[in-house]
Image 1: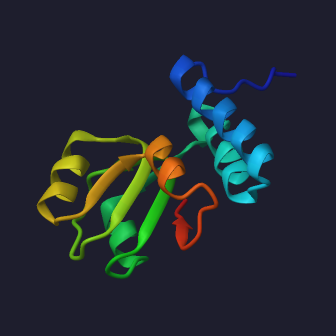
Image 2: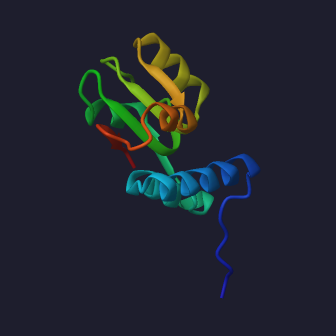
Length: 121
């Protein structure tokens, strides 16, 4: 039987631990869910393209991706996207569409309960 592994990146481990602590402090299932999704092995972690984000959002939405945002496709509206990582083309396209790319830590500071935030997987 193969031993289950989680993330090995120390920054990601720290983020997961901080999200778990914060979720228990404020009793937030939203943060607990994000921490669980980030704690998966790399081959099971979420990767979302901009085309998928564009199809599943409305103007002004706030979205969190518990993984990586990739640059396939484009954005036709201005939204706020929070993720663990962004590819270089994704960051450029997000900037071109007058959208915002923020880290998960920044989103937690702004909106710790996750009100009106969509989780895209």
